[in-house]
Image (cartoon, rainbow, N blue to C red; front, side):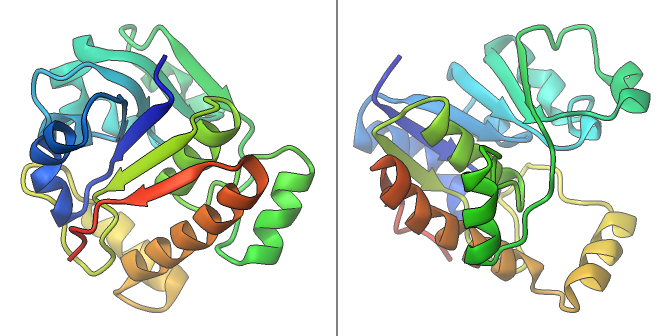
Length: 200
């Protein structure tokens, strides 16, 4: 395993993921949901997902390139929706975490993963359990847009997210929560966080 992992999320900057990987040298790769479709032919060390619906969508098209799947614990009633090809799979106890630093500190202090969104869960898990010295991040842009070719949330989920957050700019809230978590991860695990600098 490398000391470095590159997280590829689904924001517009991830359209440049192949160039980013080539420019920054070898690393393990962690994809968020179906973001692995943005780097065809590349071996994906970790594929993080939070909802089993993503498994049967674009993830299925590059499943053979994925080494290990990682997710919050999936409720038992949804386990039948998990395809048979998801074999090497790590689950961590789910207890949603807000984007506020005090809540994140509490989650860390009891050994939990700060899962505010799939990216924050991935960053914390990779720092804590993957023990990576450096985590590079591309595709966490905020705003309202996604990279070309990835699945976006459906209308019902989109409406729920707007209702939950009180704004259409919930991706900005997720990005800010991710940055908050990154500051904690640096302090607690001495993990170096490198943003792509391509965020829109």
